[in-house]
Length: 260
Picture (cartoon, rainbow, N blue to C red):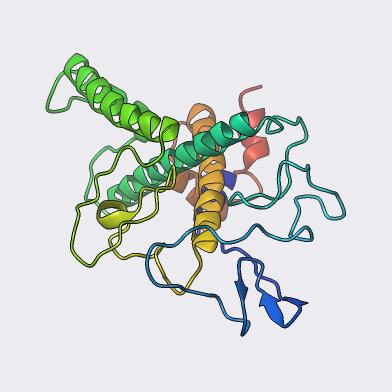
């Protein structure tokens, strides 16, 4: 249904605009003298903040002063003023980034197995009752192992937030410059082996904006998956197929009305 449509649109792109300014061209991401996206060699850093006339969530409105366009996915939306504290804004940005990445993994982990199940590769797949299935270990062992592993990873991430660059896992190689420490974006050989964020043809801000936009869509999609599981007892692809077959009767309104 609607959630599947949201998940299908996860590959959105960030719009660019050209604004002439003193012999330079601003693409909406970073400056270049010839109107091209710059791609300097070596470790990349986030480009200059977007201009004041960047795309805003509500056309004609003015973004808060603390949302200056330097954060990926910043469209000036903060009606409650939650980001007015600079320290809280940094925390909220990292929290959204982590939730986005988990949501993208969750949506992929729901859609792909259900699709494989429809092809006959997986039997009796159902993501919302996966916790009741039997695995290679008992639930208590799996819980303890997950708590230990996730605790170690989150502890390392917290240390990097408190002291950026302190968690350095990048191997030291001759004639190779390590990536610039940037909280939430470790990069390097392990997390950026193709160096998309280091001198790639597309600026770093474009890639980070795409990631956060896809993550926001994934979070919405996952919420939709949960509602679908509660109201229909089926997976998102099953609901999508039913909606396509009979959109007049299989939609969000019929799902709610059947439980009234």
